[in-house]
Image (cartoon, rainbow, N blue to C red; front, top):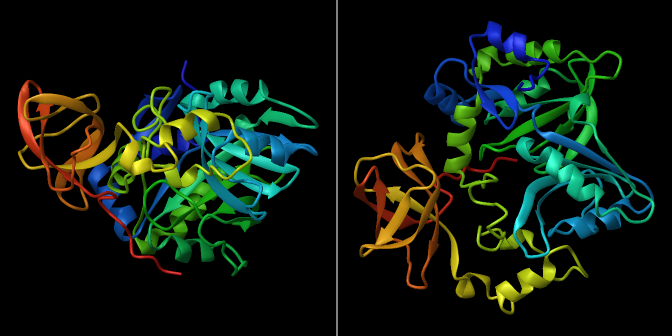
Length: 372
């Protein structure tokens, strides 16, 4: 039986169409995926992402413990900073890609992908040392993602706090009269916020928070949005999806995430294997395979798992593909082998036994103009 978030009935009343994802029953769309996609790019969209895992780490040795779990540098990050991190096995492949929220040196929380929460919790718990306590508090929280260029204007209507957090920063504040953790993060390539509401706290009302945000954004073009738009938005921004661009078979270096692997750290799980793969840190030159972006030249929809060929020989496979609505093209990401691949090179994508032309392009496909 799939889990449901506390907003299931509210979403159902809005006409949401549900699918099974990561053990949850979640909205794929409310009206139309393309309409929701463009609302986020041009105005704002509101997502319920309460399926994401919430793993809290507390205790005197928490900082050192978490820093050893992930490839990025948590120790030097300031408090109230969110840090994107691959979390690796000893062989350098990926357990999960997570966000680590550093409240203090003794209090952090890790946001995990929904389908990996149980696996991540077991992995994290199996590496405990010193004074550390690890708790899975996923069921205690509702997580909303308000994304799009007008998201800041909408948030300001719901709070007396004029000091909104900067990019990848977060704060504890009050939204719509409720205590939340407000984080300037997201998974769409747009400016936006994620709101963490502890539903066990007195005064917390997730349905009221959801409705208040929708009402505040009504004149701003805000729409509720589902997993369909979330996927097309993240693909345009070339943001990795676990099980596609990252997995137990793919390292963060192959996924093009070397900037999140800090080799100057004293140690982290998987460091030895990743140092060996990087060959003295010449990452892009020395990797045998890595993630590339491609754009379809022929008509056709590329999907996960489709073969990619060059001169008739298989060189890899599509990890994520489909329409890129903002650009009005089809394209995607692929894990390819070969030292002679360059931007502009033509390849073929095998779509239903037909080899369709595509070309290698720079990623991300879409990059927003940054506003402070």
